[in-house]
Length: 344
Image (tube, rainbow, N blue to C red; front, top):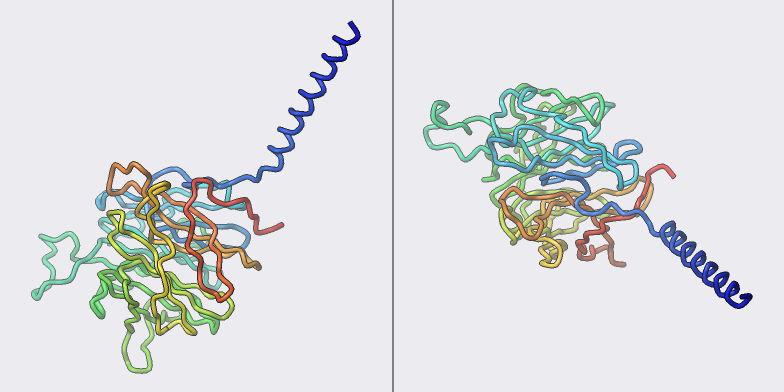
């Protein structure tokens, strides 16, 4: 009997030890964001930090005639994301008839500005647009303003900020960048052309360059669309998307320079399809945790299998650098990233 009791006691001790080990392992396992980071079809994500929160402003990925609003998502730790629905829509932007996409957000003087593309305008014919026959006769790049990053945003101008074609660049996919001297620049462009312009003080237009031009072309080799710029250790990094946004050829490449105007020479591809994870990865942005050297790539990708042109989701993965400052290729994951609160 004593030996049987001893065996029971030993078994119970082992079971408790295993249970405790499991609990310890669970406690030690870091929480991960998972990919995609939030539900729904979303693309072209713009990631940014405002005060003590991470924000992502994506395109609502749908057919152009249904793409009539913009949502935003915020997080304290990169794990739990709160949805802010309809922060901007065609009720506020009355000149936008379809295809609101590629939002880009920035703060200035206590106000929050949301830049966006609308109407997918095409090159005008020699005789101009016929408003009775072409829905895209008016559109381009717009700007909205709000008192908080979650909106609601209202039209800043009541018309497009930019609707003309310069240097053959379609006015889409804008990104706004504040340089170290306080100058605000806009980079934009589709159809394999990228322009840069200097925004004026109240974001109602653009200042002329010294040569009298409004925009300078800075297109690097391979550029298609989706420009994004950041600074690290005194170097400027310029990212863009290549390939076709509707298929698996979509990918992200980058260049480095000593100033925002370049010259920009393509260095490498750093994000592309991985048939074990997802395809069509592109139109990215980058988030840096405030006061740290922690960097993240935010991007969209197509799940496998993919059943529709607009079936795109938003993902986040760690971005790392080599000793010489070049960027390591991004490893796409299903796990995403670990929690990283801004205030610790």
